Image (cartoon, rainbow, N blue to C red; front, side, top):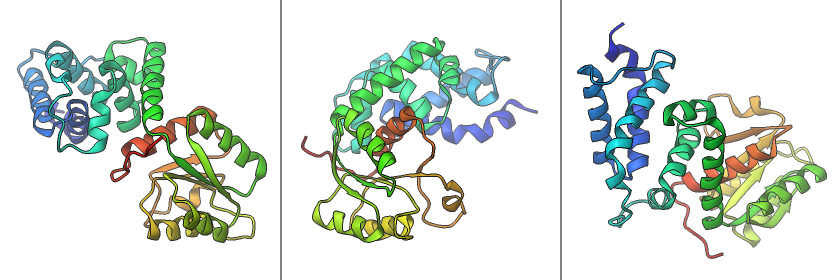
Length: 264
């Protein structure tokens, strides 16, 4: 199989990553082009101990590390979307680790291979990036959950991240009423509620009123993975790990396209 054929499925994604990393489409695409040209010319090789996707990102990063420092200037960010501006304010190494795992879906071990770093260092960098994000994006949270113990656990996690729980609901009607009383910046929702009503329906009705990021936390993920619209970007399966919930909250707030920063 030719080099191009091996890499072709991964090129759209490394371009996406490069654009997010640099904060600019043209600049990001140019770095990907340079990496491909280096591979084609034999100046760089795909590490044989890595999968093709990990190896491609590794080569990109090798080139980026030697020439990308000048692009870390955060001036000239006018006109760019909120996520791009926030990304460029995160320390470069933390930004790389965060994007590789949060945006590109690599495991910390794979990100460590890409960055030529220790896996524990990558975990630390991700935590630093999430801390920066959480501090800037503190918001009001609505929890839709009918099990009191789980609701309390989620509320504790939310508060640990510096957010404010301004509403809890156990039924569809309570959830819709809560939004009418106080507009949240994030919704965490179960799908099976106390009176037999549906958290999915509650979220649909909420999204008719406001544009807000939603994370479903459910013991029934198959009900949300049917291929029908709308489906959630963020879905956490019960029983959940606290770190999984924290990471999903950071990512949902960071990447939601129209979210406006709120006053703390």
